[in-house]
Image (cartoon, rainbow, N blue to C red; front, side, top):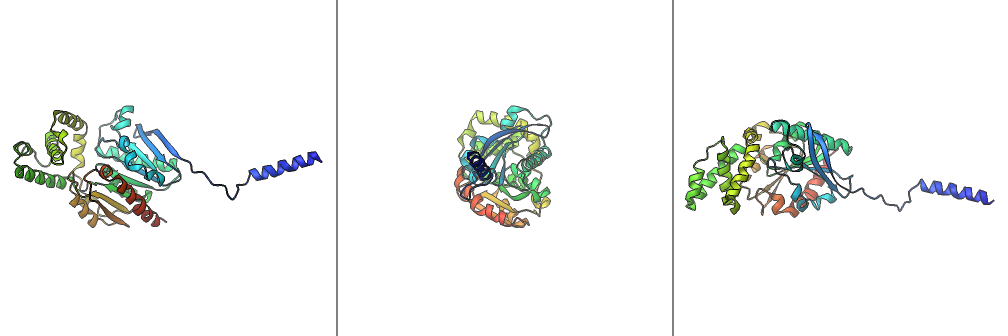
Length: 327
């Protein structure tokens, strides 16, 4: 009898272990890790964070080029991590990726665009997904628009922050603004150095002097120091050849239609590139869904000046709108 009861208890226990209690909750799998991925024939660094790895993927494409967002990303992703698996990527010749290895190939826009494509398909495969959200900042939009144009089916939405849509026209407008400001403020040094700048930018000093006085105009006094010039010329030595290639693109001519939702985020005070051009392009482009969100307290780096609002817009406005249009 005792033996029979023992067998009965074992049987009941084994059945119970195979079933979940109706009150039992599935605990989300948190993700907070880094990875080194083989992309474009070299090691590239990514950081992945989220409270639930089943949430939608959201990939940031940083700007610069060469300016990693990882050191400051926590300040503008703390809320996003509750709604997405947030992925930060240090592109080739940038941040942690540069510490691992230098690019074995000459830098080009096409090379970084190909890296972007490889990384996105790696993420989709790793997490067994069909789509993700793609966010870019400034130069990163040259990678983001390219991917969105070629592979709209792989995106819930594309979210360009401070997008580059016609850089040559933007540079012309910026130079007109700076020359007017220099003369009105009777800044003899600014007038003299800005007069050296030729459009389109063909020499490193063309870009340097325009950026120097743009920074000073915006209140960045460090741009007056010799250390700024040295640091900026270090950047130019790496990126200027590629930059000359990238600024020739004009999205008004090359991308009139985008076959995925696109949501523009723009600082009203962005003088790094004209926000008026972004507004014109937003009105011009055809897309299944589109919106333009203005940030009144921001310039070129919305994520620094209004991180709470940026996250609120993505979570409350863009996320539900994009998912509602997904089959």
